[in-house]
Amino acid sequence: MRSKSAALAAAVIFAGTGLIATAGTASAATSAGATSATAAAGAEAAPKAAYNGACGSGYSVVNSAGIADLGTVYLTYNAQTGRNCVVTIRNAKDDPIHMAASVRVLKDGEETEPVVEEGEFSLYAGPVYVDEGSGHCIEWSGVIGDEEYFNSGSNCGQLK
Image (cartoon, rainbow, N blue to C red):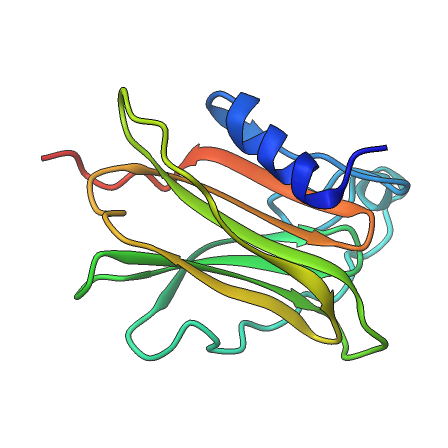
């Protein structure tokens, strides 16, 4: 069994482009914030963890995705600095559990390293930041326990 960081790194390196949602034992996260099992059953979606402002002032939420019924990963952007930030937030503070937040800029012909924070957290993982988001696509992900949301090639800034 590979570690969570190995799974994040593999997803980052081999994902290609497009929207990818992966899952552990329950079901895949969707961009609408509900699990596919929940949607199929017709039940209401789990409550969405509110963005907590962890990235700092000047950052606005540009995308988010539910991670099963455990929480939400947020992608934010600061238009003044051109920086992107990711934070993964649980629905409720609880005993520490494995969590991660990851982000990287996708540049043509250049392999960029993801910025990752992972560990045991009670409420949120991150914030993690990348520069040069303006004019490039972003790859971002979040993990809570055994559940993961991964998105590659989204939120592409206007190319210059």
